[in-house]
Amino acid sequence: MISRSLGIVLVGAVGLVAAGCQRRGQAAQTPPPEPPISVTTAVVVEKPMPRFLTLTGSLTPNEASDVAANGQGAVLATLVERGAFVEKGQVLARLDARTAALSTAEAVAQANAAKANLEVARAECERVEKLYKAGAITGVDYDKQHAMCTSAEWSTKVADAKVNMASKSIGDATVRAPFAGMIAEKYVSAGEYVQPSSKVARVVAIDPLRLEITVPEQSVPLIKVGLEVNFEVAAFDKESFKGAIRYIGPTLRPGSRDLVVEAVVPNADKKLRPGMFATAKIALGDRSVPVIPVNAIRVDGTLRRVFAVVGDHLEERLVKTGEERDGMVEIEVGVATGEKVVSPVKPEAHDGARLTGAK
Image (cartoon, rainbow, N blue to C red):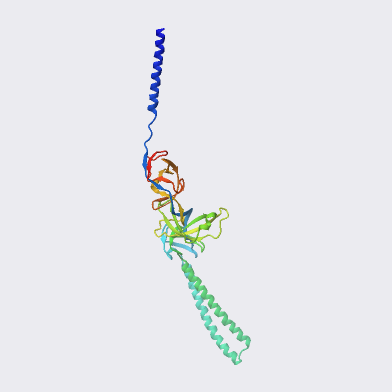
């Protein structure tokens, strides 16, 4: 009987010890509360910030021309290569002008003969005029001679025109650049035979360039001639270029319901090239929007976070940012005017952090 009672007492003691150990283990597993942190804050205020219309487009030449031979004959020489810069009037190619020279000589000879015939006809007309006044010839003879004089005058004009045409053929044997630019393509080589319509070279003017952008229908009322355009191209990362809108299309394209607009872009250093894809921003003036300091934002890849003060703790917010100016950034979504955010953001700031006090 005594043994049984002792066993019960021992079991009870073991249970009490186990319960005490379990309570101590649970107490050890409960982490202590995080200490509060001290932060400085900035108030979300409204300030004027630039407003932009972001569009896409591509660069095109200010002028482009497939220069025609404008004459016929064998190509004697081509004097430019693809990528070369040329000035207005610079020689691109020379054609064989020997046939044109012979034609010119023939035309000059015919013109001289026509002038000689005209002199004879005029002298004869003067003689007939005197005879007619004296009554020595009939009116029919008089009219016939005057018709011959008129025909001689027209023959002279025709001969002069042929001389001019033949001389032009000699000039056309030298193919020149119609404007300053770059050779984009060379179509002929020495020895080829060309016709007046044959293409010799393609010349593109790249200073200035045109930035062709498409404006959606709902944004058309915002576009005006003279608005500044800032744009970037992939070839020059983070470098910004400028232009100004000069040409606005008269109608919207039926399929895409957008308007084609062209901005003129200076390109004196010739860094930009036709065909480059551009992301453009058209400045539309300022507007009043909520802003916070740039240093209040924690950047995490493509995400932007801020920490708003709510009572005595922090609340993490994902925000959508807009334009930046003078150390301030526009907040499109995430916080509202009048709220407080941690600025500058600290590494220890996190969602739910308790505050010792906000300044």
